[in-house]
Image 1 (cartoon, rainbow, N blue to C red):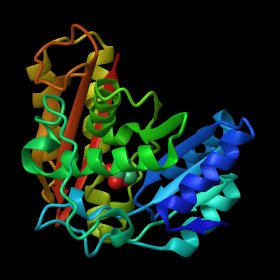
Image 2: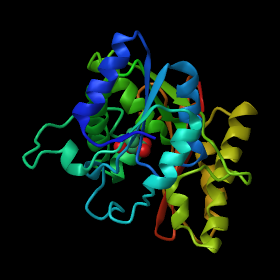
Image 3: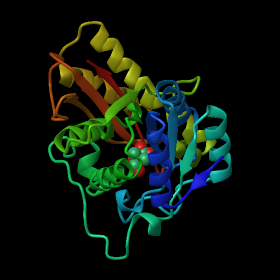
Length: 280
Ligand code: PAF
């Protein structure tokens, strides 16, 4: 599997593909790839002639007390997964390949970044938008693939691409779950066996919310209260937020009368997990 760390070599390779009239897909990741990432790569491989998978634990999207140092990494296993999935190139830069010592340019998307994770992770989306803009400039893909598990991230990136005329199609892909319902996440590896069981309260709450909405309940506050009650039954769980927002602008919304995102962040011990459902 070809692994490049130098942005200019990636740019040169994409230029070659372009000369041959080939289309290019990009799957941005932070590595430690699982079935969720594989579903993005599979879709990208189906829809593009060549696929670049970026693997980069982006320091500027982590707050000072977050898990940057301990974030799991395994480039060998990742490169096997990417190769088996049929992608063409891994772009795995080092922080110094992406950020000059005096780096000073950031991309900030307002409104859609403000609620949910934006409240408790103040630098997060600025870091995500900055690195994704850099990846878009380096790879210049036709399409880029993001998981719906990070639903707010998907909304923020769609807004950024529209506002800044990137001319890239953003493809959102469904959440991939373990057999028992837990949404796949690289951070699941932090969970002890007891916490792993406790973490099921997130997908149980999602299912309860979906049942209510699909059964015709439109009162957002009632839906949120029932979802919170499911999580509160689990002693190891500490709710950061459970909210309903409008899917269009990620602002708090109290009624199911259009496209909505219902999202949660819950701590299980030291591990912060997110989950959600969308009704468009
Ligand atoms: O979703 C992620 O893994 C990251 O936020 C992303 C989009 C790769 C940017 O670092």
